[in-house]
Image (cartoon, rainbow, N blue to C red; front, side, top):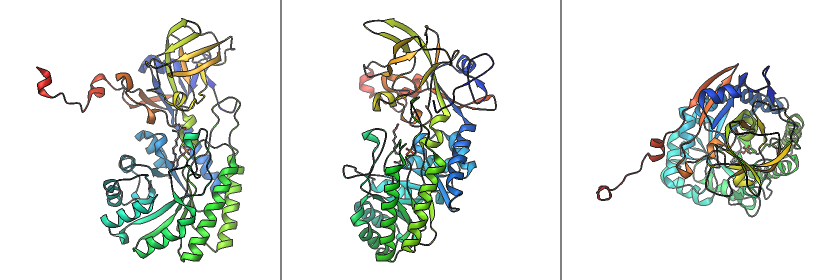
Amino acid sequence: MDFDIETNEKGNLSIGGTDAMELAKRYGTPLYVIDEEKIRNNYKRVYSAFSTHYKDIKIFYACKANTNLAVMRVLEQEGSGIDAVSPGEIYTALLAGFEPEGIIYTGNNVTDKELKFAAESGVIINLDSFSALHRLTRICDPNEIKISFRINPKVGAGHHEHCITGGELSKFGIMEEEAVEIYQRAVDMGYNIAGIHTHIGSGILDPEPFMLAVETLMDVAGRIHQEGNIDLEFIDFGGGLGIPYTPQEKKLDIQNFAKEITDLYKNKLNEYDLGKPTMCIEPGRYIVGDASILLTKVNTIKQSYRKFAGIDAGFNTLLRPSMYGSYHHIVVANKPDAENTQTIDIAGNICESGDLFARDRPMPEIKEGDLLAIFNAGAYAFSMSSQYNSRPKAMEVLVNNGESEVVRERETFADVLTNQNVPVRLLK
Ligand code: LLP
């Protein structure tokens, strides 16, 4: 197994030096527990892997993975920038203390209002279509804005077809054949060109498609430089770095991955005389994915035609298993090392059959009242949660050095009802 399951002297699951059983007792469940040290270490590991081979590296943390303000503060302290996907994420990043120049906004199918918000915020605007370029030009002064373009390098990869964002079926990016044309048009309009960008998908454990995308983007950058006479300040390869979710999956060899990419990068810089632009990447999952666990209580053991353990979380709390069929490793928090003695379905509390965390999962004995810990719940977990079935969203705590702090209160029924208005005539 290529991820850590730590236990303490009581034999209970431990995270960030805290006892999972005690956290659940103190804060209730479902509870997201975020390990600060893990986030810092993940950031440092990826940064040093790349910067060993090329000094001028910038990481834009893809905050769609986890927008908790405390998580974002930690990453700001580490020196990260932000990949923001919406005005809401730009707003959150600014509030978390990121400088606008350290935020790259990669929207898609953006409205004029969103473009105006991004322009006024002073962030780098990464455009995805001719339409957005023309509309941006109508609402701002091109001289005052730094832009880049997202290119579709005709290669995509990802852990699920919904997570592949490059290739001919993808809605994202500019066709690589039109790249030179759109850059030239932007220069003619008076824009400051900041860089070039791609992002081919999410959850990639095989370096090969990523390398192909790097190669294609560098060739496109070369053409833009040579045919369009345009200098690039940065070249951004997006995110996508995967983490192991199943016990069989292996960790990405980040040292080797970084070396292969930077070697190719440097060769292509020379080949096209591109100078020394900043090399950027936008990991989300790699930085926060393994840093959280979701604690949830078993409230029902049910022997129907199959055996179910029913828990107090659902796909409203963690959508990935239902949405992508994703595997999340699950242990019993007071005996994380116990032998598996059965196979069981682990089902959520949402009124839909698809609300399953695991089917036929080998597990130790589970009783009602047991606490389960669902691993790798740091990325696309809370950030994709909802209030479906009128269930308030979960609480989040940050743990570090044996201490825990609430970084998001548990929602109440009132929060679920927020913003609704009942017309007075219906009150009679
Ligand atoms: N950059 C851009 C432009 C992106 O769209 C994304 C993710 C990233 C960076 C970060 O990708 P990462 O390093 O985290 O793989 N909800 C899905 C993942 C969707 C990813 C969307 N874009 C999941 O739960 O697997």
